[in-house]
Image 1: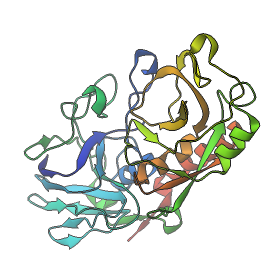
Image 2 (image 1 turned 90 degrees about the horizontal axis):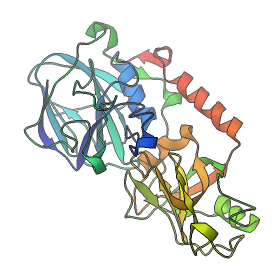
Image 3 (image 1 turned 135 degrees about the vertical axis):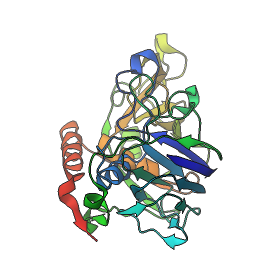
Amino acid sequence: MLEVRNGGFETTVQDYPGRIGMLSLGFAPAGPMDDYAFRFANVLVGNPPGAAGLEITAGGLVVAFHDERAFAVCGADMAARLNGQPVVLWRSYRARPGDVLEFDYLQGAGFRTYLAVSGGIDVPPVLGSRSTYLPGSVGGLDGRKLQAGDRLPLGEPRVDLGQVIDRRVRADLIPGYAGYNEVWEVEATRGPQADPDYMTREDMDAFFSHHWKLDAASNRTGYRLDIYKWQWARTSGGAGGGHPSNIIDNGYPVGAVNVCGDQPIILCIDGPTLGGFICNAVVAKAAMWKLGQMVPGWSYIHFKEVSLEEAIELLARQDASISEENLERS
């Protein structure tokens, strides 16, 4: 069991890939914003990559262990300490009964970090997933972020602790994070509603060349970007509405760049599942983790256009890299 002594800024239970197959029923998948760090943390402690763990946004979490476990922290640096001793990121450790793991707040680049514990967080699945969907108060622990006094049940570890402690991720597979006011390059495919039917070629050229500022009013539901004066390829949305960004309601892909009037908004993993505005691009699934480490109000985004085939290849390489074969002994 994990005892929560301080829930921090926003800490939630998540699993990967989240609540899949529910978009048609209005449920976003939820899950970790940075699934790359999340999955590697699980692999380090001998869990399946998608086992339930904790997403720690901005920091402040304090937990106490009630039994012996392996744990790993991957993602942004929040000066984690076990019984006051520094914890190195992207490495597995042993925790004993009574040990206290605490996180400070952000120490530099990045915005979220992930805690995996051997056996995984064993809260009840809801609609096929343990992930917390905060807008609907679904999943995780009572559908909410963690708070002091919470007790999180843990599952049975799959392997002996001696096999999984003191391991680390290969250095060349640990990503670097763009710092404050720096630019993230994010791979994205064009469409489903782009040029020439909805936007002009000049609009799309501007979209893929501009450095978009991430608005402070951004969260797991949507990442708001700069207001931009588009040219548009049509004068109205026709049957969909009066503005050229309007369309008849349709389904939204996860990671879609939803253009609502003059403002593009990236629909994140807690985002709406359908609506009546165009989506001129979709973030490649293998690049979604980058959104999880951007800092609202500080980060910039440059969208790099890739083909569907390139996006599929990026994901295949990423999935193959998150493996026991890419761990080393510390």
